[in-house]
Amino acid sequence: MKNASDSAGEISPETRPAGTSEIDGGGGGGPTIKINVSHGSSHHEVHLPAQSTFGDVKKLLLHKTGLDPEEQRLFFRGIEKEDKEHLHLEGVKDKSKLLLLEGTASKERKLEETRKQNEMSKASEAIAIVRAEVDKLSNRVTALEVAINAGNKASEKEFLELTELLMSQLLKLDGIKAEGEVKLQRKAEVHRVQNIVDTLDSMKSRNSNPFSNSGNAVTITTQWETFDSGPESSNAPSTTSSSTRVTEDWERFD
Image (cartoon, rainbow, N blue to C red):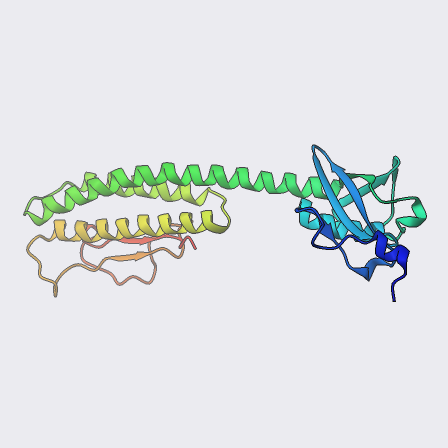
């Protein structure tokens, strides 16, 4: 049963101002008090039993500031308080003011998050630049394919130039460090370039043998598993003409 002093000191949920926090008697007993907490340019108001601890205050402030309790430093009358210290024993009363500072660990965490965000932003921009260049090369490959399908013959130099330019874009993508969503963007662009190179290889075969049917067409082998080495596959079957069989080993960018 509550005594008169307890009932008089409590603040009912109906009369508590909006935006304030309350903790039930888990932190201690006594009447509920209101504490004003200053955090930079922000001011927070919490309600909790008078015999609660400073650790209890930090738990309430977590929802208001986004700072975990271990990232908070609470000061009362210029002195930092420990989590286990009780409010009423340290002189904290109704409408008392506390100062909240952000701990070093929190600042370091935010700096690290900002650094990663900046890195991912730069990575995304770099991928966008590569994507624009690949768009141009893809248009050239499409135009070349239309010409070959129309019966025209393209020069070997044109195939070589397009292949080298596409490989250059793959190298750029390989040098981009990315995580999360940006990494998925990078992977998608790598696969796109690989597909364009495969198409270019097939076109080169048809260009070299315009009258061959599907049964007698030259074999094109494009392997991406060893991109960094780029040697000719030692397991590829021999052919009569090296110019009619293209074997390129590349590393898969996964």
